[in-house]
Length: 574
Ligand code: GLC
Image (cartoon, rainbow, N blue to C red; front, top):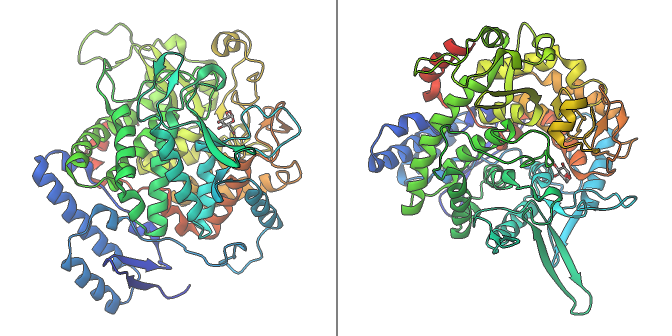
């Protein structure tokens, strides 16, 4: 491995190149500790702890001389939080030709994937601003000719990992402009902070002009709300900042405002009795009616991760401070709620199986009045002796026991899952390999719903029949999330196994959007080909395995201060 160097740029920011171990340099936000302090003290403390953190980060894997230099710099100025998160990870040169750091020849699919990813680039007034959802011209396009915010995330990460941050910056800025549009569905005006689900570049050949057209759900099938878009936007902004060391983008007043607007939407007070975020069906990757209304795990995990990222990106100015305090409080409550009530393992399952109902009091064990009779048959076989996961949804008298891949992987990456829970999730994936990976990684959810339940839950959706599409279909894009979770939990061999399976077919099948069948054996009934996030997801997975230091841009270390609370919740649930 090359010798790391420390550089000081003109602004006095310290940058490390070729860091030896980015895992050890994670930022921590210690939010529970911050909560107990009065606001003024809170911010000073926060700044100091961040300073200390950046100081210790820099002394990892660098020579004593350089470390001393970093110390000097560190004490000579007060670091903003943003300085703290800027340790560029794995920068590369050779923009067009990804290099192999291990010295092994890259898989032949990698070059093909890069070419396909570059073909998917969307330009606006000469600049790349995103990637098209699918380059498949064979069928009706619907909205697959648009740049989706959620779909762009793996593309953006692939470009960042390959040392091409410009497109990510352009994307962040363009979507930010779209956020400031006035958004209306019929006569109803949407919240200011809403980020679009997707956008498109319109060419006017007469005026020789280009304009953007965004969709905030007002054209989407079913008029579904893209609750996840704003969260992905914040997560990508942090990935950009972390990977480039360029804090100036996140520090822009418009970016700070964009974040605050997103946060205003999801931190607002209402009638809720839970800290989780209440959503309508189809509000995320699963953007059709699939029974994911209420408090879906995908949104809760993204919410948690976005809050943690925002905490690192927000400036300590008057407006920022107020949000920081609200975030700290919410994180505290949210992690407690999720770790306690969404977590399911054999012990917890057995407890629910024996629950008493109709308990009225503060001491109720069955807090949500879940009827043991509502436990589905399959869960008893599915639950391994070792392992566990965050279930799909929890609300009054309703536990959706389905496994959802994205939410569980994000829970690991954001450290919403405790280290023990993260290990348990990986154990579950290993012991339920056939069901969750089978012949094509990876099941978006498990199991499929059928017959009467399918009729009631999906409204007889012919696209979401059993083991197809969102209803138990297998989505190659999820490979990047699985791989990142594997790297974070020190189980890369699981990701390698999954990738090997994908490599037998993905290119041959021309990068399908999804596969059908219990084992994922068949190309999806209505699956698009040349689906960009299948391509980018594969590339990100490959790059993460080749250079695990990339993980730093998409993962957050556990907040040590949460530990005491965890022990309490563990004793209830594990
Ligand atoms: C489908 C997927 C959605 C994705 C979009 C574009 O609607 O359900 O998650 O963002 O296609 O690929």
